[in-house]
Length: 259
Image 1 (spheres, rainbow, N blue to C red):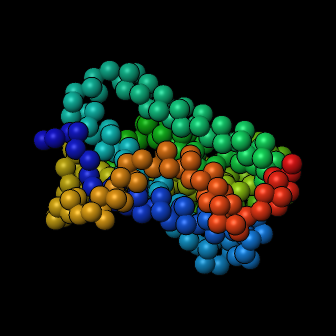
Image 2: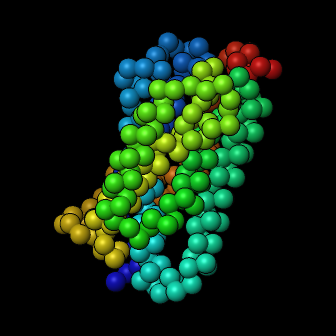
Image 3: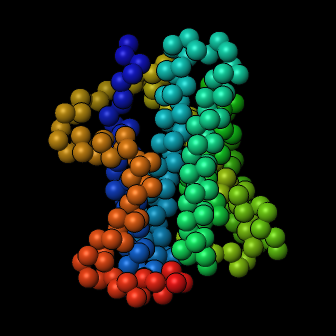
């Protein structure tokens, strides 16, 4: 068994989600900077963004299952404190990148800056899901429960911002990226369940022809295996491209960025 191999279909789906994310953010930028009038707060593009997020976060759960299975096979699960330390460090690293995004957006778009976006969420989810990495049907149950509770919380507003990370937000709260623990932690849990069902002991439990050499699939897989880097750099690149194409005027850009 090659425990260092990557499952090309996982990278493919992650690459597809990354492409969908970049596409949505291009549409969002065109609307946000007043270049074209797109409705991104409801309708098709709103749904497109949620489907994109669901795929990406669902794959976080599957990837955690694969990572945990690989560690178990290698026999590194003997010292649970060291194993937890691995996921703690990974989660804190991604959460810290989220804090950098918070700082950057606070500087450039203070009226809509990101308080608890997808990197904050993924970083915290990696840590919180650690006790459930070896569970199967429990993840199905709590996944559904978290999603239901999340939809319930979304119906309420509060007068304080301290529980934004959980899913309770003030009525006037506005941000360009928001992924609270509820309901999205439930999607990670569903991914853990799917990972346990479909990739038991780091083995694919279903038949799939090997398409990993296909040029198109290799392209998507490459994006999927570099998803974090693409996420961090794609927005500045999009803005530069829009400027070079002449559809984004620097004067308007500085106006929107409050300079």
